[in-house]
Length: 342
Length: 222
Image (cartoon, rainbow over all chains, first blue to last red; front, side):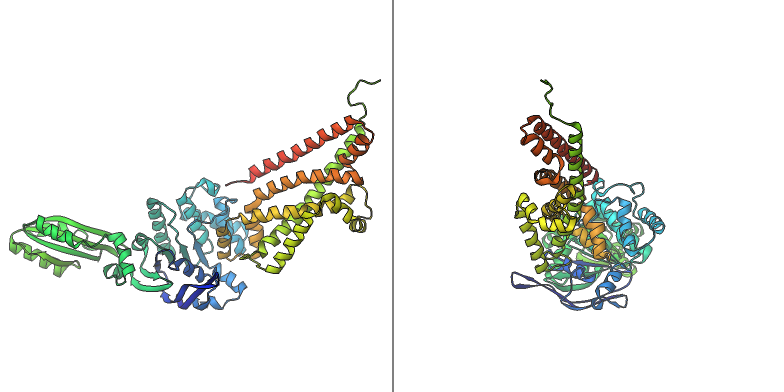
């Protein structure tokens, strides 16, 4: 769907060249939610602007849906842009227009007649959940509502691709979640490819299928979100994963072993698990053992639960052994014995 | 001997002078608005990182604007006599004042327009570009509507200067309240005429200020 080869952008500032994007190559599949994460200054904002040539690339190729974006002249580029939606950190709505007229703006640009515009705008307002606010001005809306207008506006021309430039960074956590839910909803309903850049791992975890980690204009790590969560390779990626999972405290495991001196302590790894959510109660019912949850963190990704749980199993040794074997053989949860029963 | 304090005032003359002042102000205002917006847009679009970035055009337009703003208005009128004569066919009367009034105030308004356009959020322009808007669309659907309150309040400031200019033009034969005040008030030492002209001009200024403020507030949805 989208293929990017050797994409580069160099800025000239004070006679010095600053390379913001440095030879990026990646492929994005149709219908995917592709996240790009990096700290500020990593070049991710420049990257997303290169995709619709709001910034002109200094090198490389961008092909979207068999159309070579980097080869278009300015008229063709304008038409191509009409098939790409973009939402922004600061919403960038026209304050002089109502919600309705803001959403109608891209349709005016594309030259739709008034009647068609009105019908389409109403559809979009319903889609993003802003019914009743059609005639409000942006200044009368909350941040989350403004971003909903931004999303409706970006979707007006039925784009194939939605570019999100830090779309939730100016919003509070609760509003961020509702906007992310809306993006997932749109992705599923319309089969739209979404490319979003962010500095919050939470956003990647919650909605992305694929993630690329950027540092100094380059992709340093890329892959399935769950894989990157499980095995972060680069230092920067590990830091981002820690944002969600907390640090992996080795000393706290030692503390657990000291404190709970009875029974067997095991660590359960949930790896994109959706079918065994009720694992603990299931095991407790099936085997005559007590399960005590000691410590852990489970988080939800687009491919299910991911995280670890430390539990203490106490009771008959044979039963404990059976329970561990059951989890190991019958479920996709990984078991690691931290300490055998004394 | 009359005791009436406004003994020397001929109501017919006063009304005619007021009408001429309004006539000159409103026509010059329209011209100033059109040319000022054009100059302001040109300055804004050709500036660094602008849509039509062009150092030379920007420099030339800025130079013209600065030169015409530097010339005192009364001297500008004299300088423009040949041009006015060519354009209007006379150098007397309200119509003959229009070229000087417009050329005198359009550069000033042009600068105010440029400032107003620079205040438009760059993100909004970028959003319009990302939707595939033409430059024309960006100018007429984004830049001008988004800066409209500032454009109107700038025009209000300009029109007050314009009313002052019409009075000056009046002294050298353009008609209007300036003309009436000078010939019938000052030269005949009929101070009541001078006073009434002042009062009428102040009222006209207040009317334009009130209308300008009202429209600015109505337009501003921020």
